[in-house]
Image (cartoon, rainbow, N blue to C red; front, side, top):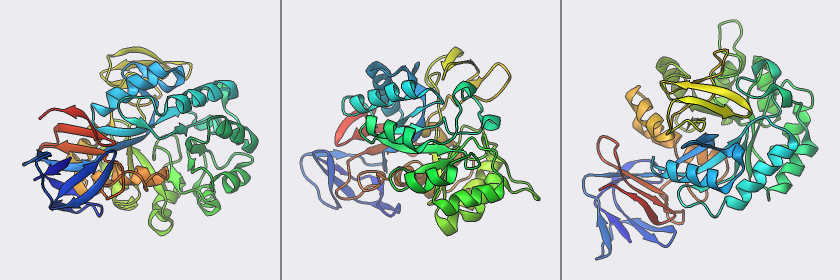
Length: 379
């Protein structure tokens, strides 16, 4: 199949006029070829499929349900919003619950029918109690290398990122041993600037939902945010950003995108089961969340995940003034690199999966292709 006459973001994220040849699951060529078996996409733009590396739930379902039906509902909801692959994300829970959730993700990985699963994003339990946010404090604990290895082996090694508060006891040893096999991310932390920089020196190259549940930047106390801005370009530290306009003020988003540069900003949804659903009461990691007007809060007013999605957030950041090239990279190749799957997806390049999103000039979704198969066609 050939997708012809559209503008595309090529592998260097330059907007060019080229055709894409798809052979089975893969991109076989990016050139000017044509054939009778072609889709004429005149007037449209083709992006790499969007990747959500941090999502707890959507469509009324949650990763923590540990059922195929939940992940299938999430998969189908996501693909309708231009997301072609994702990382189901866990909460702070007991070893036994995490083991069950991770095993289900491994068993469901090749069976879901919409967006496909890369692997687990393990958010917690190795976090700071003072910055737990909507995580369940009953299960917060110090980093445990042996526990992590048992979880990792129990799900066939599909954990794609694990969170840690670097000030916790055992953090240095954990980071140095685990980072080579699985990306370690700074998250839910009361660390100061020096402690965050130490974690970066130990090997951390990723930060979970920047600004949220961590020490902020002030002129005398730069905090985690200052450490990220100070190290992002020099050491390649990437940072997630929830771009729903509620978790982070648009001005703070513009500052972050500018400081991080186009290779280190990552758009995530951090969405819960209420995303794509209705207002009401929901469960998130064993805690009741109240959703009103799309805003998810605990009873004490703590922000509890989002009800957004990466596609809407991509449009948000462009509207907020982020350059389109950086916005697109932040939802595609940057998360792919963060979870170490950029050899197979994240950009339009020969040999990669044909994970593609076709939009019009207003960024309305016209077609979504996952591994060479058209899943959504709104033309």
